[in-house]
Length: 447
Image (cartoon, rainbow, N blue to C red; front, side):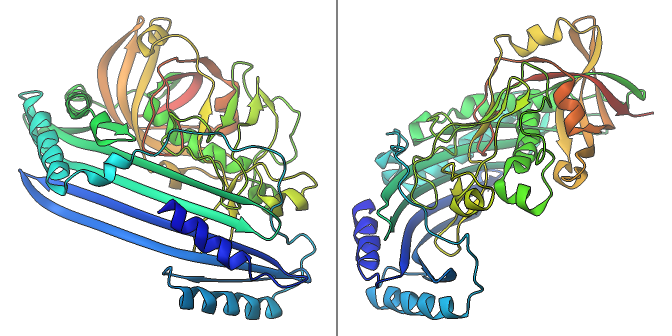
């Protein structure tokens, strides 16, 4: 498929007229999602999509159109429409296509062709076995909220009249299980997951065990007292916070005035142990890719270096407007023009396990899960308040479970109050990598 996409975009760009900047991006994706319930298929979808987006820039005016097929006639119509749309576009001196910047794309082993050959029956069987194994993991498991298998196979190619020619292919799959544990009239939930590039890399047994453990250890949970104390974020919770924090490092957020750090480059905003990076070239990252949405090579971009704001991520447009350059961070599909954002954000890890982090805390709480985080964070001020559950920490060990409380602070204060970063890196089916994070002086509101 990748050869076909390369040919398609090459043919489009070959039609560029004098004085016209022309870009073509072609994408083919195949996705499968399976959810089972009580040993039967509850939901099944297998979708395949492909198309070509065409962007034309003439006299600082931009036109865009796309075709939802690789049919040559439909692509020709999209090109004609893009040219026509450019005549109605508003002039913008910063408009322009990406140009070669000398950064070579890193060769990443992200494509496992065997995933496409896995029979659907095997995928269904894996989801059913995940549900069975979760039920069998503990006698207190009363039901399974959901047991799911999902995979994705994506190929993309970009060509421009400025000389860019790049393409990439990625596969990914994951399992998730949400278990319900019961004791008396009480029910608690917990999740487990496993991610991989290929079907054989998935570990359903571990996902089932984790889901059961997370659900059962919350049984008997009560509201904690309201106080300020040290919290330890579970890796999945840390990843959720990082995903929100990453939005403040988008060049678009800087230009629109809703970045927390827009005017703070070079300033200390976090504990010296904090180095935050966006690095899509890490093959372990679920969202890794070698090429961005404009055809430039992706690269490791440092956002915070030893506590100091180091930079932001840009596509070619935001780079020009801010007087810098693209960081290979354009994001898009074939049906839209390039946006900008972090693709694979992570903290440089420490060396100790979660249990070792907890061993140094006399009084605190391990945050196992949060609810409504995205709606509970103000992206402009950084203030947040979110529901949470977890386990109290007493004398260096986890103790009684707690629930129905909130944690509140600001993203800025969290960064400065970090005590230690864990070494328990977990790669999740999302654009952020998780690890345990110990933070001091967070308000916990319960009774």
